[in-house]
Every structure is written in structure tokens, then in C-alpha cells.
Amino acid sequence: DADVTQTPRNRITKTGKRIMLECSQTKGHDRMYWYRQDPGLGLQLIYYSFDVKDINKGEISDGYSVSRQAQAKFSLSLESAIPNQTALYFCATSSGGGLSFDTQYFGPGTRLTVL
Amino acid sequence: QKEVEQDPGPLSVPEGAIVSLNCTYSNSAFQYFMWYRQYSRKGPELLMYTYSSGNKEDGRFTAQVDKSSKYISLFIRDSQPSDSATYLCAMRTMDSSYKLIFGSGTRLLVRP
Image 1 (cartoon, rainbow over the protein chains, first blue to last red):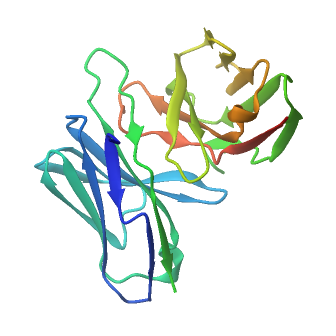
Image 2 (tube, one colour):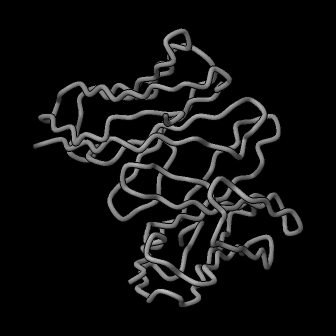
């Protein structure tokens, strides 16, 4: 089974709708992240969480909110979706590294289309 | 201006060719340099990383960092069709392990 799972894998919705993307991990990592990927722009950090009670905004958090329900679960919400939020969304996890390199492990992504 | 620039390609090469993928950056505080590989409809996967300047080799892959020129490279020797993917460079400073700055990715196609 995959270590980092995302649901749904594909979603088409309409402008103004509320959407939730979910991420679960079995790696036992404390840190979780949400990114979006747009053609020509690479990945941009939306939110990140170092543990259940520590949630922080990334570069492009406007229009998004998150919830860390448990160590293993991190959800991303679009309160009122707009067309320019059409993108690929990735969840990632990492252990925090300590003395070693903090590798981020990515889920398979959710393709979101807002009409 | 983007902090990290990467040619989007696509780059098409015959099987067995040596591939060179590159990124330039503007932030001299970057200390960790990563290469991620992303297959179609999959998430990025860390291929290798380098700390500060120098080279690092892993099988057919070699990563190079030239901090004086703010330029990093990934070389793939004896390229295979299975290497066809998008390659993303990413960088971060010493203190911000969570904050990766990604290039836009280069799409590579290795023709059989």
C-alpha cells in the first residue's frame, strides 16, 4: 500500500463550491505539507504542519484552509472554489530530519478542475 | 524574477545518450540542492540531493553544484526509456528544511 494517499484523485467542481482534499500517511511522520503544481510554475507551498497543533501558512495560502485531524491526516479545503484554483494538488510528509536530511515524500496528487 | 529557473523542455534524446539537466538560482543562501523525478500522473520522488558545492554520484546519475555560478546540473548516463519523466530541481537554505523552492521542471523523453 502507498505510504501517502490522497483522495479524490480527480475532481471537477463549479465556481463557488466548497471542496475538501484529503491526505493520509502511514509513514509515522510529524510534518505534512500541501502544494499546488501549475504548468510552468513548479510546486508552490500552500500550508505546512509540523505537528497536530502547529499549522503554518505557505507562499500561497489565500483562498485555502487546512485541518490536521491527526498525525496521519491533513486536509486542504477550498471554501469557495474559483477557476484559477484549477491545478494539481500534492500532499507531502517528512520526519523533520533531526541530524539527517529531511526528505519530503509526496502523494500521487489530486487533479482539481474548477469550472 | 523566479528564485529558481529551469528550462521546461521537452528534451528528446535517443536511448543511451548522456542527458544534462540544469537549473540556475538567485538566492546565495541555498545550501541543499535536490533533484526530484516525476512520472506522469505521479507525485515527485526524490532522486538525489547535494549539500553545498561539489558532485554526487548514484549509479547512472550525477548531481553537480557550482555555487559560484549559482548553477546546478543533473547528468544521466546511458539514458533509458524508463528515465522519461519530468525532472524538478529544488533548493532550500540551511535553516528552513520545510521550505523547498522548486524549478518548473524539465520534461525528458528518451526514445528507444
